[in-house]
Image (cartoon, rainbow, N blue to C red):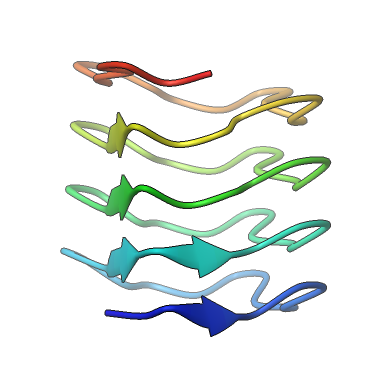
Length: 85
């Protein structure tokens, strides 16, 4: 729970269930090929981030900026983009 500036965070191939990011800047962050079911991104910024080939089932992007995101090959079953930009 932030605010934290985590721009360019590089965490590919992680297994992280129930991850919680609140008021975090994750611009150009990389989470490729990770498993992050039930993750929550709340009031955060994920611009130009990469979620390629990730499993993000039941993820929540609440009041979060999700501009120019790479979701190529991602699983977003049950994803919630409530009030996301």
